Image (cartoon, rainbow, N blue to C red; front, side):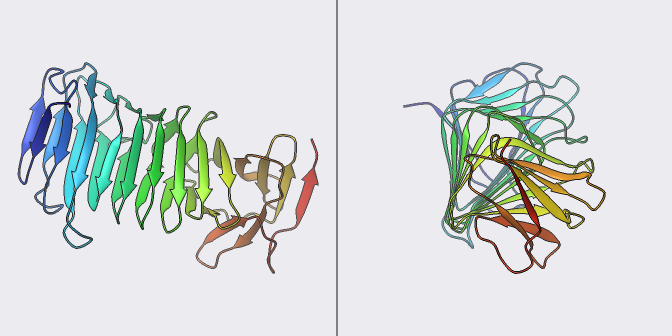
Length: 271
């Protein structure tokens, strides 16, 4: 049993030493306007046991925010995961630092995890455990680099948003949707591995310039290319199954294991 610190509406906690080490931090705000806010500006690592929000229903969520703050940004480590049920949690950086998420995390029951990467969208989240997103919930990492050796499990009805994903991370699409957004404006790079079940969908936003695709069977890399042959997006899938890209009608490109009318011309490269 780990010690607990619970923060409710209006709480503003300025952490100037690593006194959160080993604690379960519980946010219990009743609205985004009154949510508790914890500032980490001590310049050292704070290793929490877990971050927890437990609301009552989709219309009575729990809210909270954690900010890694200048001028002496430290790093946040969560040893045993983030646990949201009817929760709305924001983690953000003013500019600098990193957040490491270890252990088993669960984002469920219409919850929202906003993982922001600071002013330059450069402060990374390092996922080394397993993050399961389910039951109408969303985990949004689209404004920060995502790294680590962990796995994101996206269940039916859930959504995970990503942008810049490093090699080593795995995404299991078990009926949910992975939304890949090119916020950096230099071509989407997803170097983690996507294990996509037939019911799963990878939706690539801002990739409508793509006119054809090349799937590399030996590496699982799918390249979406424009009419000049320049890369619009590169996404790595696990296995050698074919993947097909089709405009989704909402400004994105949906990648599935099924060929549809309007799917981009596909070239299979065994290498």
